[in-house]
Amino acid sequence: MPLPICAACGVQQGAAPPPAICPICADARQFVPEGGQVWTDFGALGASRSITWRAEAAGVWSLRLDPHFAIGQRAFLIERPGGAILWDCLSLLDDATRTRIAGMGGLSAIAISHPHYYSAIVEWAQAFDAPVHVHAADERWLQRRDPLVRLWEGEALRLDDEATIIRCGGHFDGAAVLHDGAALGGRGALFSGDTIQVVADRRHVSFMYSYPNLVPLGAAAVRRIVAAVRPFAFDAVFGAFPGRTIASGGKAAIERSVARYLHAIGSSEEAK
Image (tube, rainbow, N blue to C red):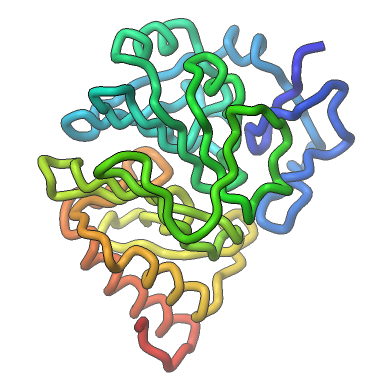
């Protein structure tokens, strides 16, 4: 039987038949839809959807499923001479995308921000023989195992001379962002997933334990997030969803957003 994919969060399971309820959606940070649990699979997705590419900056592409599926996040392909880095992932890998990435030199690594975006990481890893880096603090949320899924520990993992995965915590214990110091001609960029959420005005970010259920993070968790990224230089912040990009001044935007957030939740402590 094809491996089932949850239609609500987009995460592929490791065996068929699937459980009655997706374990990731049963958690307080996600939800089971009002109509109940629905499953699909790789073949059905490929018959109904494709992957669209958008150039975000020189050597930086966003990829997303069209039409919208599950959470609707965008993944990012960051070009490198020795094979691109894929930040976060999608629930489908179509033939056109597979061919296009192979023509660009394949993937050297896949880095994942948190469990909601595990999607079809094993399918992508196997297609390009690329390791998938998942923080060990979130190991229990892995629904499909494979030797290419590599658990990392600690607070940072260097992928190459310019790219570093940074553990921030907050949204999940192992929630992470990706810093690329080479992006934007050396101005640097932060790929933030849901850990640091670029909001609609594209001048601020915010933070949540659960986005769909509107459960905020406490002050200590938010201060930890900003402290984790503060040592890194970057100008742009690429958020999880289409259009959610702070094109310049991203580091300053995070600092003022933390102050705004702490004030809004009634914390008298500054972001330090």
